[in-house]
Length: 357
Image (cartoon, rainbow, N blue to C red):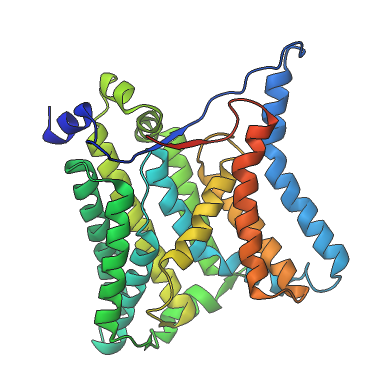
């Protein structure tokens, strides 16, 4: 038995905080006909996609010739690629009952690293991208070491990492915007299109499909789900819990780093004041909202993607109506609250059980 697994067998220590994320099938109300639970579950699984379609129809009717245009949808789909990747990065630790508050800062650090290496040190753009992603994975590896190996509280450790990385970003950038990143690279990611949609959308789509495939259809993904439901059961089943959690953190760092690369290519220059919680909070909102659909009660990659673009469509429609910037934040916050509360109102056992232990 490794030191990590031995530590986890004893618990994470006095006062440590862990996230319990469980999904269970809702019970059938007394007197309900057979099949009631299955039908209700199916309705719940597709409620968000249907709401998205209705939202699009409503904005299309209200804004004819403006909302349902190629340019508007190219903007909606392309502009959310970084947020989608950050949501997918956040999802992986959450599946295993962990949480990483530093992922937004890791994304910004990756973007800043790429910009400095390419613009100021004149590195080849491909090599700068590789180094940026490796730096992100190293940051997540430190998170894994402190939380998994030494039993640190995930909230405290990753919050501390967020603060440290923010300081590092200001330090290496001199508190100034760094740019312009290789125009040819930005053109490929941001300007070039396929079927009228920027390439960055397809990058996010590929990442989503890979995360979905691994979590849903591979033994490693099934082990991650078991770890999230019960670490004790996972250990009794022969799962190396410490190893699985460590891989989850590092995989999240890889995806966050890739998001940073796309972010740098999209904006052309990197501002040290962007990122952090400003990027992370909408991503986490999308992950929780996405847990209400496709596979209700479980964090899942397709649900997170649908939630990202549901929120983006709502924000774009409100913006076209002339709404102020703060309305977008209200929309995101309200969507997150509804995502957590509404399933509970529909019956016992629905939704994601998110509690502190």
